Length: 382
Length: 184
Image (cartoon, rainbow over all chains, first blue to last red; front, side):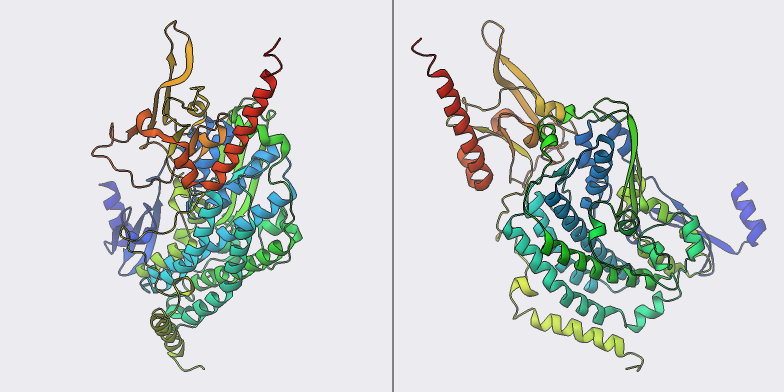
């Protein structure tokens, strides 16, 4: 009752409260937002999450280190390989495990392919939210499917890859796999050209996306937003460049930046990032050495995961996942299980400024703004 | 080029081109690639992994599994249940009496395959798994999990041949080690 009274006092009965989700198809899962509307304008927005909470961190604290790897696949299920990468990196930091050269290259190749998969999927889904029903999405999925077939051949699974191990990767890339990746990389620019002809200059898309959901660089940096959303606001911050983790500092690639920070910039930054990923893939495929794919010291761990007892201490490992900074914070007390395990999920932190982006916009724009942030609820709620 | 609507026309040209050429192109190059499942099936990918199965050599009695319980312990969602078979005197017979896998819990991660020191549990290609109800129906017992080595060789020829070679080498080594002790 008090809520109703307050609403009446402040807005003189002019606002309408609408619930989006958790079953609304445009919320990409089970996300819910409570929107205060004045006519069609958004006067307030409250994100509500937790519907997909699966106790990820608590489960992980009761498992040996190696057994957490398949659970990390389920965080951001669109690109499981980036999650694997982040977790493997953290434990390697914690237990001081070195990774052989070839494994590093394989990791970068797979992570960049996962980034392409994620970006084409998110562009497709965002356009679905815009009303371009399934045509761009299915064009994107046609290309995505080729990469997923390759993932299945190499890792054993299309989505839940579980491919990275501490000190290497599970399976080597054969010559056939490398040829398949080269083929994918060589024909991707043609698809991107087609995709751009279909979308980037399209007047309807421009009118719906430009100057919508503007996020200023200050607000984005203050809220700790990362990934393409931050870069679309014009902030040059990419952990691949800042940290240069794994072997990313060896590759020559640019970081696409947006100017305004609107929905269109976020869409276009992702398209450009696919091109940069292809550049990295080209260089990695040309330079991939032969050799071991697993650190010899960690090979026995593959047979006996409980033997891995990192020294007491803590480590924070982070990667540039397609959605932003994906961090894993692990505290070890010298037992086979982590004492504390925490995930810094980019989807969750990028969502915090949803209200700021939506205020004053129309209700229909809230959906594309949400689509342009690129959230995956598996990661948001964990 | 600044005519309003030019971008839309260009986009429509892309969709028209895709629509028409899809009839002539090969499935791999943008043609129609729908597979009419279940009448048609895609080629199985060797490394594809789904629920685990147990391998035996020759007859189901010669099961490779010795019920050591490592997979049971390492399984992340704890979907495996093993009980050791006891011989007449109450000693462990190094054989599983009970080996259950709950398919409702299994998340196909392949951890059991990784940790098995006896090369006895492997990931299967079977994905059409149904049950009338989810409590008992999806629990697979030892009898249904057991599959011959020939089946393993059929679905995953490369992995199976490597493992067969490894096992053969280990057996010969064992024989060679036990042979000189024979006459003494």
